[in-house]
Length: 178
Image (cartoon, rainbow, N blue to C red):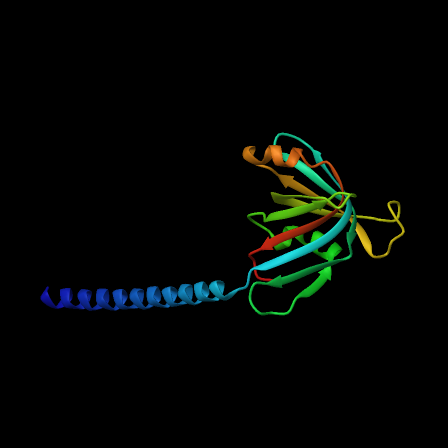
């Protein structure tokens, strides 16, 4: 009997050792992934557009329509990396892929035809769409874009104060790695 207990203890000790090594390996893997996430840059996207309007769609939803959005979207990090550009159509088409879970906050500043600034409007951007510009204008340097926005109760009055503006500047923060 005594020998069997030692054999069982020996097997149990090997199993515990193997389990501990597996846990240690998994912990190291998680720590490495955490460090990589800490080093991933946060991206700031900038879009410029004109002929903008905001339409109240329901309880807490609004739609921002931009008739003439520049075809380029600029993006950069807060670190010392060079700024880059991407097609605005690609950015809006890939919106769901870029933000699969939590949707991004964005700040929009509006300019009236008189040159007066209004904003910023800070909102959660739920979805994006690019529209064919053939009917809207003949400018090859712009596309039409719509963003579905979410406004919390404390921001409703801010969104409803914006109606129609000559131009806008959009800052969109993206935490995911490109």
